[in-house]
Image 1: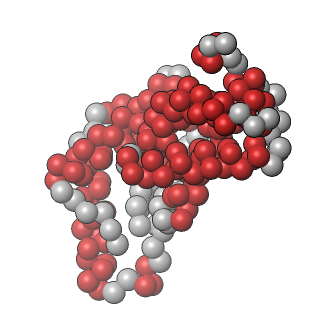
Image 2: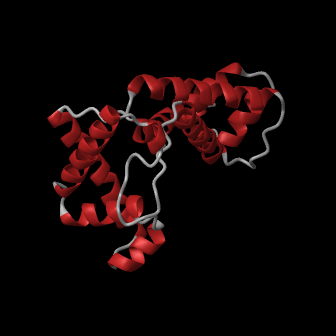
Length: 194
């Protein structure tokens, strides 16, 4: 029987029953979607590759232990695993951005001011100034969403209500704002480090 016509649930149970090839078919079937999802979060091919591999190691382990009971919803389950591994990756690298809940945006709210010496303070204020200027270069709609989300800590639902656009549009604008910021940072060769 043609494997492409077999449902995920059947392939999963075939794999659990010892058909190694069934897993290869599942990976092949969903690779693009899962890979694209991870890449859209980390923007790095090597990291994406690592997280993709780790996702399927976890999938294999769970299936082998007989702990899979997602009632045939294989892809959403794998996506959840991938999502959690992406979060773990950012936590491990201390790159989870934390922001002060104030109108005045401060990218360095993560850093304790007490630990900054004079030289670092100068660099800190310089980079903050650079970041503010970069944000000013964004198109108005993207800048608005970025400020509401990052500076004012508003949810996308609140942003949607405040701006009169759908949640999806707000998410899209945020995404483009971050892509554009990244481009501007690369263009000016700015290194945002403390």
